[in-house]
Each structure stands twice: as C-alpha cells, then as structure tokens.
Amino acid sequence: MKFNTKTIHGGQEHDPAYGSVMPPIYQTSTYAQTTPGGHKGYEYSRTHNPTRNALENAFASIENGNHGLAFGSGLAAIDAILKLLKAGDEVVSTNDLYGGTYRLFTKIYEDFGIKFHFIGMKNAERIEDYINVNTKLIWVETPTNPMMNIIDILTTAKIAKKHKVLLAVDNTFATPYLQRPLDLGADIVMHSATKYLGGHSDLVMGALIVKDKDLADRLCFIQNASGAICGPQDSFLALRGIKTLHIRMQRHCENGKAVAEYLENHPKIKNVYWPGLKDHPNHEIAKSQMNDFGGMVSFTTRRNNYKEAIKIVENLKIFTLAESLGGVESLAGHPASMTHASIPKEERERTGVVDSLIRLSVGIEDKDDLIADLKQAIG
Ligand SMILES: *Cc1c(COP(=O)(O)O)cnc(C)c1O
Image (cartoon, rainbow, N blue to C red; front, side):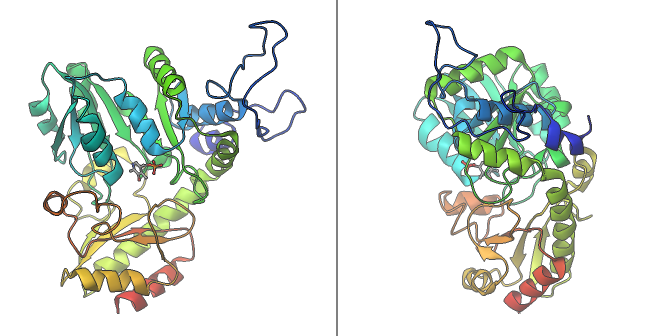
C-alpha cells in the first residue's frame, strides 16, 4: 500500500459490530466480562481502548512501523521513552530542540540521575565523540525547532547501531509524508500528534512508533504502568486528521516554499531558515532524506531588534500569533519570548534563537493572501 492510501486505510478495518466505516468513539472506561478474564480483548481503557487501538494502528502504518502507541501529549510520549532509562544512563541529544523537550530532560530527568549531552548535530559524525559505555539513547529532532537544521538520520542510525544505542527521532515537523525515520534505521519515531498528524489545532496528543517487538512491549508496559494515555474522543479526531495528512502536507510544502522565497528576497529580512533553500547548510541531506521541505519557515530581520519582531507578529492578520504549529491555519510565533522562553538566553542565542527570530507555521490558505499579510506586517 502506498503512503496516500495508508493515511486513509492503513491498519483500519470497518467496525465489526455494525460495519461503521469510521471506528466508533468507545467512550468507556471498562468492558463487561462473562467470567473473570472472559472478555473480548478489552478489560480497562488505560490498557486498551478500541478507538485508541485503531489510531495506534494508523500511526504504525503511516510510519512503516509495526507498533504504534498513543499518549496524552507529545511530551508524555517522550517521557515514556525516557522511562526506558535508569540513573547513570546518558543521552546524546541535539542542542536545537523543542523547548519543552529540553525542559523535560534538564528539569526532570537530570534530577533522576540521567546525563544529557546537548550537541550540534549538523555534522552527524560528531555524535560518536559523545558516546560512552553509559550512553543508551540518541535524541534527534529534524528539521529542528525553530532553526530548521537538518540532521542526517541514516548516518546517525549507523552510529547508534554500531554502539548498540537506541535512536529516537522526533518527526513532528516532517511527518511521515516527508520522511520516515524507521526506514532509515531509527528505533523509535516520536510525534507531537497535536501538530500535523491531528492537523486541525483541536487536540493535544503524542505518538510513538517502533518496529521491534521487544521495544514495543517495554513501551506498552510503560504506557499502561504510567498511564499517560489519550482518550477515545481525541483518538477519533486524530484518526480523522490523518486521513487528509498527505493532501494537507502537499499544500503546506507548496505554501512554505512560496513564503520562504518571498522572505528571501525581502530587503528587511536577514536570514531565512527553510531546508528547501539552496543555501541551507544541509540542503543536500534534506533532499536525500525528505520528499519535500515542509511548511515551517523561520526568519530574522536585518536590524535584529526584539521590539521590531514583536511588532511584526502583532501586525499579522491572517497568521495568528500563537504557540503550536501544523494546523490548517497559519500561525506565527516569536520563539525567544514564547516556545523557547524556558531556555536560557545565552543557550538559545548560541543555537541561533536570536531576539528577532520569527517562526511561521505556514498553513494551507491561499498563498497570495499569506504573502500579502507578511508584506503588510513587515512593511
Ligand atoms: C509540540 C512539540 C512537542 C511537544 O508536544 P506536545 O503535544 O505539545 O506535548 C515535541 N516536539 C516538537 C518538535 C513539538 O513541536
């Protein structure tokens, strides 16, 4: 089955009870048993729920995995991965990552005795220098948030295999429409399904997808034992979202390109970060591991002035000033004061998150309207 068919049918079957084409929302916590243990595969909805299972099968299908797991948020999904580790273990992580992931690593898991090395991964070979006998996990986000750096998944996966270290890839920005990390050798794919997979800014959810059965069993144990699951209503919404992922992504990419090219030629704009631009430092790797370049675009102004950047995001009319990304509607954010406010200024500036950096989640509206909006806002 090809990707554009998988988004609609992957892992799905019509409901056995009445043949309903969409899985019903099984809004139940528990399931009747005829005798203790005599049930139809479902006992309690923290462990399993038919609507959530349908979604988990869809997750697995679109990422070319064998097992999918759904969580109450992207961070809950990352939290489950970290629970595979124990005190004394070490993690090599990209230094340009989602602020909430950084916060989870440093403010919670460092206290539990896990050591993190945050490094630039533009050159993936550097990762090997930070691996030792205690290293258990490599954490990669690509494209990175918000600098749109590209990390070479294939090379990283080879290093991970060589040292028997797990490789987890946060695939939130790319989605499986653009890149499939499991095919490139990653062990775990993670999503904030809140973003493109859900696609309509109407839910908060996380996903993990793996190929390996033992790893899936360990993660399912954690999912059930720690309990950070999502409910059946949200599972239904995410399933509905996934059905249009391929057509939404096609338009996100088309509009992202138009916006990046417009900004690149704007006299007041200094840097434009979009992996499809030829002068992007890892454009060639992006071309080799992605099918297109997505709808996330970041830029800085020539004056690099904090107040000027705030004015621009306030002036936007079609782009909504808001946290988050990946919905059908265009959003704009100012990382230094919003998503990345929890990262110390020195740390964030080292990775390029300067005061004037603006991040756009380019939606699927008409691109002429989006460009006209940027034009009037930047002035
Ligand atoms: C939003 C996001 C997360 C966190 O997901 P939540 O659903 O908000 O918990 C993690 N990684 C990336 C890249 C994100 O954009």
